[in-house]
Image (cartoon, rainbow, N blue to C red; front, side, top):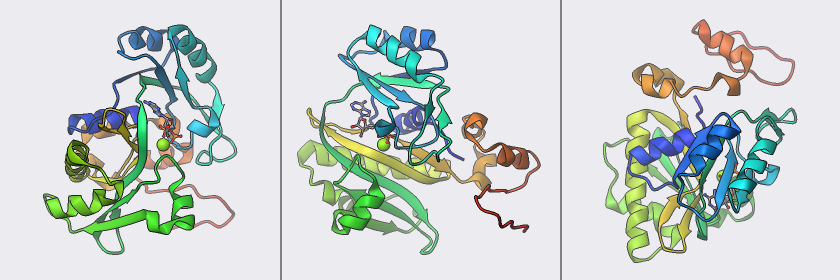
Length: 263
Ligand code: ADP
Ligand code: MG
């Protein structure tokens, strides 16, 4: 199961990970009302759809004041966003998130996933953040490191060090990055996540390490253990035939093409 960025950030925050303060809403009026409580010079408005690549598709906007935010929110809500991850039909924006803007010094990439082939947890890190990681893997594979870990309750300081080495951070920022890895590891195990992707993870001008984007997928087979996570499910974002199948307890995945599988 996939969740929205604002929900993923809330979970990360509960585990002690630094994320920007933000508010979400289903209407422009509610969003603007809530945004007035944010403490920021600029507002970052972000379409909440279950797909990445929103920035380049006009789904992430930086606004200078509440008037600009109101105008941009009206334009974005109800709009169809087409990103490389939505397919050509696009995805309608039904909820909005606005958060405080961060001043970015460096952008990194971080993900953590279950590596089924080796039955380990893999952390993938790169100093080429904010971009399409598949492109980086193709063109600059030396800029990506993969660290595989056994399923232990805790992650060692040595492993944290290996994971964050490519960020080349100093002093307190380095300590903050190591603490972030520990928190994400803990969150990953205790929620039965299958993927956490932070792109970009940033170093701010004042040397904080902050998650600017967040994607979390959970293992469907473990959702019965996490009713609080199941509540975050947004059926609007799921394929209608998959939703129908899941109501009958069937594991069904909609694929393209003309070949069917009955298992
Ligand atoms: P997507 O991956 O869907 O394009 P992101 O959340 O990664 O969406 O946002 C795209 C880009 O917008 C980021 O790489 C970052 O440069 C910028 N951005 C996102 N959130 C903020 C923020 N709170 N402050 C400043 N810039 C941001
Ligand atoms: Mg992103």
